[in-house]
Length: 121
Image 1 (tube, helix red, strand yellow):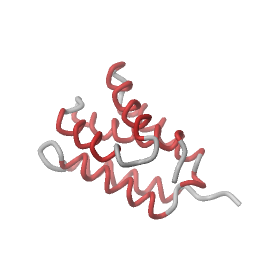
Image 2 (tube, rainbow, N blue to C red; image 1 turned 60 degrees about the vertical axis):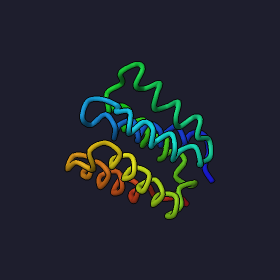
Image 3 (cartoon, helix red, strand yellow; image 1 turned 90 degrees about the vertical axis):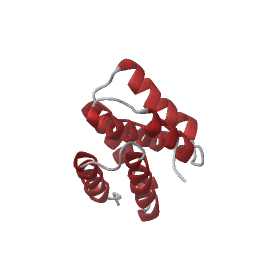
Image 4 (cartoon, rainbow, N blue to C red; image 1 turned 30 degrees about the horizontal axis):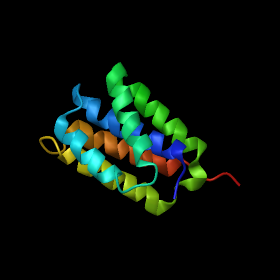
């Protein structure tokens, strides 16, 4: 289980992934809503996606925000939760014309950054 901050971070990361090609596609949006509906604080994650889209936030800013949220709440990110986040990103990326090289690189980079978030003792 994780807090609203982590849900906002996840929504922001999903938005950044979707915006790699310049726009949030309907297929990606539909898959994201469907998957996130089953998760804690799904309304916040979904709102993060659509608020960022409405203001036209650059993908880089959304990604940085998402990572900051997750870094601040790293204690809540178990190995299983991190894997679930990657699975969500892969499913969203597949929703519109399959996973591009750029999306695959984005997901790999996110995975590396998640692994670097260490729990402070």
